[in-house]
Amino acid sequence: MNNKKIVCIVTGTRAEYGLLKPLILRCLKQDDFETRVIVTGAHLCHDFGYTYNEIVNDGIPVDHKIEMVLSSDTLGGMAKSTGLAIISFSDYFLNRRPDILVALGDRYELLACVNAAALMGIPMAHIHGGELTSGVVDDYIRHSITKMSTLHFTSCEAYRNRVIQMGEQPDCVINTGALGVENIFSVDLIPLEDLERDLGFSLNDKPYAIVTYHPLTLEVGTSVKQLKELMTALDTFDDMRFVITKANSDAGGREINHLWDEYTSKRDYCLCVASLGVVRYLSLIKHASAIIGNSSSGIIEGPAMKTPTVNVGDRQKGRIMAESVICCNPKSGDIIAAIKTAVSPEFYEQHVLNVENPYGDGKASVAMVEAIHSFFLRGAPVRKEFYELS
Image 1 (spheres, helix red, strand yellow):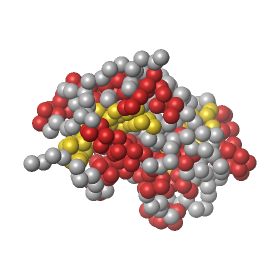
Image 2 (cartoon, helix red, strand yellow; image 1 turned 90 degrees about the vertical axis):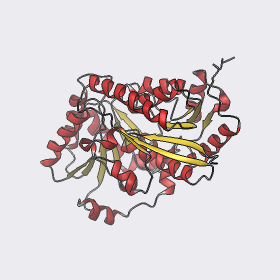
Image 3 (cartoon, one colour; image 1 turned 120 degrees about the horizontal axis):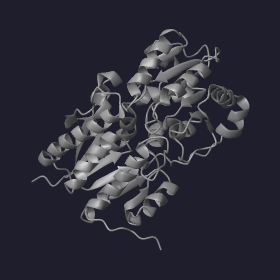
Image 4 (cartoon, helix red, strand yellow; image 1 turned 45 degrees about the vertical axis):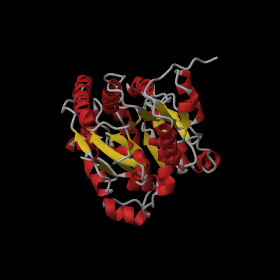
């Protein structure tokens, strides 16, 4: 008789898979876990790099694939994709019911998955709850997932307090730190010369920055305008190179990626890729002069790797940020000034070299697995009671 507990982990994007990887590997090593990985979302879209192959190449066994992203590039398309995904996840859980579902973050793919699980009485563990990102729809998706989850793994103490403020039981909210920080200490980074050969792009002759710009799902019509301001700013730095990673599968992501393709096709100092994978991405951060754009990696991984960040616009507004992060308005002049400050030796010495990273000590997956074990030992309750602050 198999007495193993079934731990189901869902991933929908390249970035979130990169964060989940150390947890997946640790769960696979647990003798009393049967770990099942569900792959969905942009992983299965050729428009966004078909990053399912990265998971397979990492040797991660995939239990099931759920296709759910429509070819639309609109908010309506996101909503319809969510509805389709709820049906597909419901079918999966009827046939392959887990003892706990683990989900990271705040995307609509996860909202669909968690909705199905909650209605079917499946306990859930949520990673990265309690955070704020006021410029995107992810903000209230994240809070909704928190309220449907029973176990919570936050990336810092302030976020833990916020989850408790939302009525979650304190003994079920654990400050584990961020999985992204753990990756930095657990993967073997690639030397710069090997990165050059692998990417077919010169990185040694000039300083380079990593650029990522995702659409703003709560600011209709502004993403393209802001992206063009960013492009104008990049054009002024003829003494730098830029490695650009494409946007995710949110509404407007395809349009942004098309504009990046057009932009980089005329500029030999730019390289545009759909996905770099965890190891190449972290290796590039390690050697970069700056991270530029509106990705959370500039907030979490950047400070941990002593790389300055230029955070453009409001997409990450509300997150706790280290001193090495410079926030600026999405105007070309402001972006130019922020980049110049970020790459200056003075800024590095004063704000980057000894920066304190607020997102943990790099042992997040250990704490998460221990908490899941404890959860099972006390009976894995689905029923929740609202915790009243005194």
